[in-house]
Length: 282
Image (cartoon, rainbow, N blue to C red; front, side):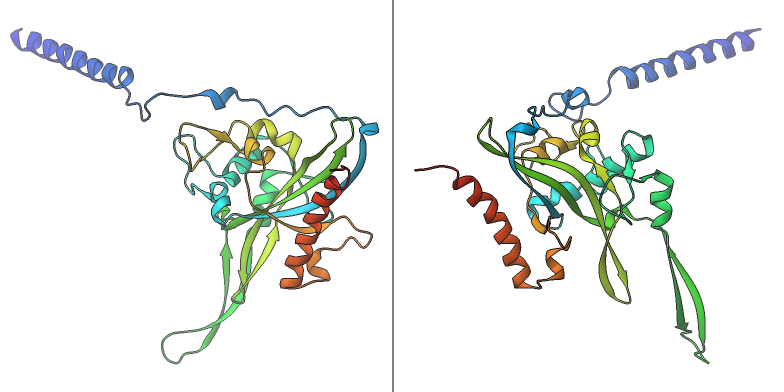
């Protein structure tokens, strides 16, 4: 009888100790910041001014490319592994596509938003198959055929293309810009040569609610939190123009190479500034 009582008493003490330990774990979770800030969860996109067709007296469509390898653009690429609700740009986009929050559009035909793609279609397109003929490293050193499969690797996405419209609003007497589409670009290798492959287009106005709630690292102040929507709307990135709307529908690289291509992109950028300046008298 004493043994049975002792066993029940021991089990009661152990269960109470376990409950107290679990209670301590739940009630005293470590806080990894000085002050917990959850403002970005309910953040809304930056409000845009209403635009009437009658107020647009001039407009031009441009295509830009953001290279994430540049120092100013590195917050788009890092961190490679998400942590503390901090994700890089492509992780935010792919998670939203997986959840169905935003829609991807096919890029193989045109850069218009015509043919929607599912998340599975995007991933399956990036499964690359390469047929190679290799030589065995041991005698008789005969050759054999093999197939190398490579899965989708988001870390290979190091560029972002932007489609935007610049216009002069005569009601506000101001040159303004609206981003219409975003396209992630992957860097691939074949035969020891690198080439770029655009993946899909995203309609930016549709993606803004998602991007407004995704945090971007601020290299100047950890307390001043920024979102990807804020980065795009306030133009906190470095880019270069690779195409302007033209009658031939061609890119700069199709008629200029090397330094000439850079000078042509700079000419297009200066045209925007000169147009706005020429409207005023000093």
